[in-house]
Image (tube, rainbow, N blue to C red; front, side, top):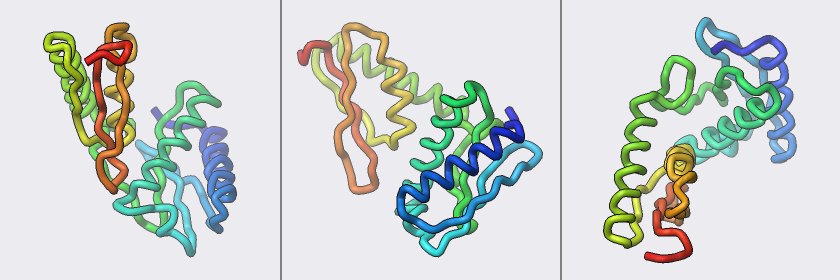
Length: 170
């Protein structure tokens, strides 16, 4: 879904404010392609915005898009490109996680839920990055018998997801 001119302008303003609050000097401009929109960012401190293996970039992009969704409801995904670095990840044509990835994570979550209920023992799955953990937590959030929690797993910011019976059992 393409974004409107207003959403494009707002995305630059919002991102610029985020960077300013981080105390980093950067200039940002929106680039509207045929099938996607991204913000091109130039900064002397690009490494601080990109992070190791692009994890800060990924987090900033996710935060920006959540703010845009809250403000506009439905709108297209806005990608970030910082000094030519763009986090490459499998996505669908709308810039979001591919349907195959989401289906795989949903299947993992549901299979784990069945095992936890059957054996009445907690299970740890992962490690996953923040957006992958979010899919798992969202899939299992409406099951009153289960609780999910993220737990530190490695230095890359990936975490394990613990699935257990509600009320701390298991």
